Each structure stands twice: as C-alpha cells, then as structure tokens.
Length: 408
Image 1 (cartoon, rainbow, N blue to C red):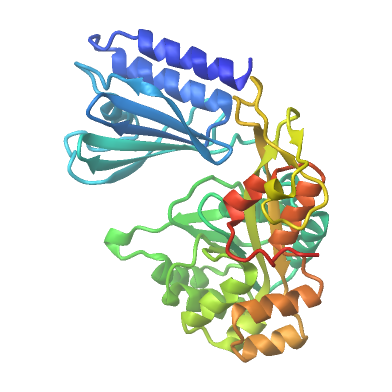
Image 2 (cartoon, rainbow, N blue to C red):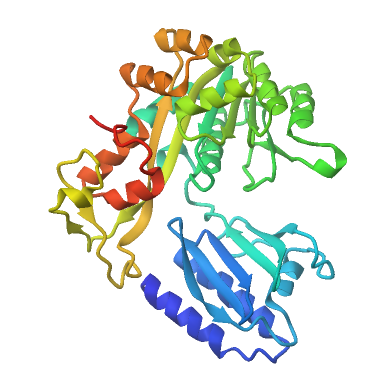
C-alpha cells in the first residue's frame, strides 16, 4: 500500500471513531502510532487548537498534516499518551518527558508534552527499527568517509566529533560507531556511554543517562565515567565548556571518544569549540576527525528534468531534476533520504597549524578543501547532477547564504 493510501486510510479510521466512548483515546493512540510506524514517520505532533486536535507527522524530514480530530469527550488522547509514557496525568501545567513501552518494529518511542494556550501539546518520536542503520556502512555515507571512519575507530585515543543540526542523523551515526566497535572487539573493550537521554540500547555498551535534578549531568558524569576504566566513551552531546573540556581531556589521556556537537560545518565546529575557550592544542591534538552531515530528500522516479538555469537556483550543475509528484510519493516528489557528509581531519599539515593559530572557519574550510576534503555543498551538487535530489531540496537544507560554496 502506498504512503498516500495509508495516510488516507488512517485519517478515515480516526474520524470514524466515536469521541464519546471511553475507549476512544486508547483506540486513537493505537491507530495513530501503528500508522506512523507503517509510513516510517520519525515524529508525530498532536497540537490542541480552538477547533480540535491537529495531528501532523514528519516524513523524510518534512512535517505533513494528517488532519484535525476530536481530542476526546470522556477520554483525552494526550492524557492516554501520558499514561503509556508513565507521566503525571494530573500535571498539565509543566513540560514532561517519558518513554512508551516497546512496540513491534520500533526500538523506542519517546513522548514529550508542553502546556499551550488550548491544552497540552504532545510530540512523539519514533526511532528506527532494530535492523536498520546498525553499522556505519549501512548509513549511505560516501565510501571515502566510511573508510576513513573505519580506520579511525581502530585508534586508541582521540575524539571523533559528529556535527550537524537537529535531525541530521548525528546520534544514528554515533550509535553505528559504537556497534562497529563492539563487533570488532567481541567484548574485548570497555565501552561506556553518557547520554541525555539514552535513545537506543546498544548491546555490549554500558550506557548511563544523566539526571540533572540529582546533579548527575554530562560534565560531572564524565568525570565519574573516567574512573570506570573505559577504553571507548560516547558522550551524547557537547553542550557547554565544562563538558567540552572533559571530552578533550579524555581524548588526550588514552581514550577514544565519540561525541556530537551542533555546528553548521566541520570547520565551524572547530571555531565554535575555540569560542568555548577550548585550548587550540587540545583541538589540534585531540580531534581525530569532525564529520558534518545533513539529510536531504531523495527524488522519486516521477522527477522531471530541469531545462531552465534559473530553476537550478544558482547551483553550479550542468544537469538537474525537480520534484513532480505522484501517488507513490504522496505528491511530494520525494521518497526517502540520503546523507550529505564532509569529514575534516586535522592531520599534521598547514591546516593543523592554522587550528593552533585560531584561524576563522572560512579559512579552515579552504585549507581542508585544499587538503582533499569534499564539502557538503560539493556532495549536494554531485547528488543533484546524478538526479538523486533537486536544487530546491539542496537549498531547503543548506540555504542560500553563500552561492560560491560547492563550486567545483
């Protein structure tokens, strides 16, 4: 059944439910979550409005409306989600977060609630099935980056920093690195993690989750973790200077560290860490590689060739296609997503010397390209030329800030 048919069928079933029945909320939630899993949605939004409960889901990174439904007369839909996630149903005035028990085909489902003008808003995040994206060669990364990462995961010290905006697959790549390490070591390495929160259970890894209210945060937890005789450490995210200092101290004292960080590019990550007052020598000597990535939608087979240069949106490409739309792709023109990635390695070179000199990110990127790095923009142009995605999608994800970037 196509995505369109599933969405239409789900909307029809939800509308047909009797909002006055006590089982309404339970049935609504079951149908909604089953439908979201069937179409591969990553998130489901339930937004209370003056006219009802607006439901949207995120497919291939884009939010799409499912419909507006009754929140329930005798049993509230959001309250039902809170029960399943073991949240406090009588507290509707504060944000809450929880997990649903495992459902078939999904490793984990998280629920987040937030008080709004018309009632509690809920967002449900669905993680990928257990048999998806297990190892780094399952992710669709460029072959040279897969090879580079595989090589770096054999190191005994240093930091692999994964960057990108929210929803770019940073955590998925971090977990894939952990699974790769577990598979290679066959239990012969001490691998630990510190996360906020733990998103997926990884066999062979001792995973810990921070608890801010008790003082167990990323920075303090990392100090405790270092006393647990680890060889490999995953730090879920660098959010502050103290955590960053802990990550690079660990990377320089005989630990392989994998972590994530919000930055626009690999070069920008170095500049941002420098702005957090991390010593240049720690960046130069502690970083094995910075991987920056984005996810862009893949064109459906119904795509049409672009004849006009104007519709190429300033990208330096000779050939391009644009989204058309058909029943199979829910009239969006896209099916699934692909990864655009760049990997910066501050090896002994002029690039390494410039890091010590606190050179700005544009110059660092220029030197990285001179050293052989292919930028995300260049990857995007290559994807457009082979018809994998469209100029509009590249601009949606990467923006228009600098049209010179990505030139060949």
